[in-house]
Length: 340
Picture: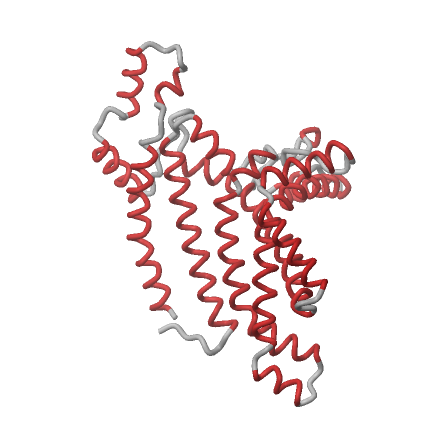
């Protein structure tokens, strides 16, 4: 197992290196100029030329890439062209907000998707299965921004039961130390228990709508995969043998069906976690969620090269690590799997 993990980690190096080259090339092909974004459209050509020289954008692209790569090897992901802040520091400050939203979305997707998939498999080829199938297709088909705006209109504008945007009510004046709202609500929201509870509940209320919007597509995918996996395993010979032995349906379902049906479900959950971390851009923009996704959108508009390419590289590394964790989990879920 150790050799397998080391081999996978070493294999990630050329992947990240190739990705860095592609990112650097494509980002510099984006129309626009960081110097113009900083100085504004009315800046003189001389001022723009001076700013480009100051930013190092006059150097040939190969030279710029070598300088960027040398910084990466030293742990320097560059500085933002807009505010001159280190990219890595700003990323770590905003990343907890994205993680918090991703965890909430996955709790919603897994907590609803797996029971729905098992329910559909139990009534396969009957009307409950058809109803779940229609719901899952709707979940995959509806764009996230459409669902997000619809949820805001229904629950925030019409019913007024949930907030439409942001992470916490500004009137609470919560001191964000870890930048995890639900954690800071207990650590830094006043001195009394009631104040902490109020802050925590408000944080959860702000989290509900964006979590549902972001988790809708993973929910549909997990439901479909769970249904297909359970139906496939339920038709295996060893399941029929267990029924012939007189085992209870509960024992058959828990020990023989779900234990073997978990592998494809765990795979898709792992892939969705990595995808949600990198794909929360639209949700964070719609709900004014101050995370990494919204930061990337602003960086693209400002032609902030280092922010975009370094953030995507970090997300690629996270995605590779999530896949490695999923592969390792296989060996624990299925003792027949061994990594040489």
